[in-house]
Image (cartoon, rainbow, N blue to C red; front, side, top):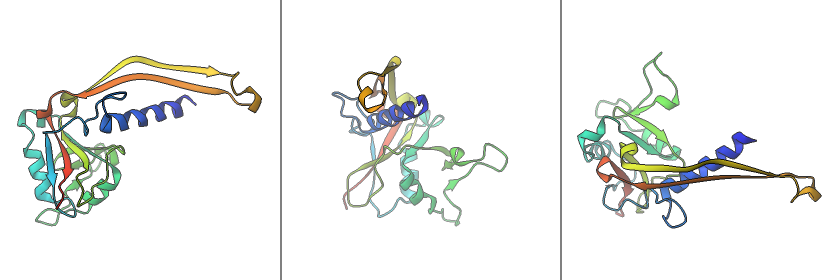
Length: 186
């Protein structure tokens, strides 16, 4: 039960940290970043676009940089190859931290976050980010999780009500540390 409630809170917070409006929610990295965007204008992501995004981030922040986007966008990028036919997305070396959580793109780790929009040509959606997100975006957890178990309000239905509270906030801090990846209307 606790695991499922924690998972729901985590998914809700992830959505707010990416797209939050900033009034009754945290200011999301996509909605709160206006200037620090890198636009992609093709029907699919290209090698040149990704290289350009890497080099728009200050080199001082690239040491801890990572990519973040959703799984559908990952599927698009998995099909990309460089000029020599090698895949851009590289799984970890055999025997060294193998698995989907250790994949790199142009040498930087990839973090899947389903809160990001899908890559879609002809729209202006923000579909991911690249850079040092820990330096660029601050998440503040105000209080520990609070679980309230109420056996009375749904007793007539033979149910127990569970409510889990979490207080947190987030805001872009240093937009030089990352770039939000966005589509450009063609």
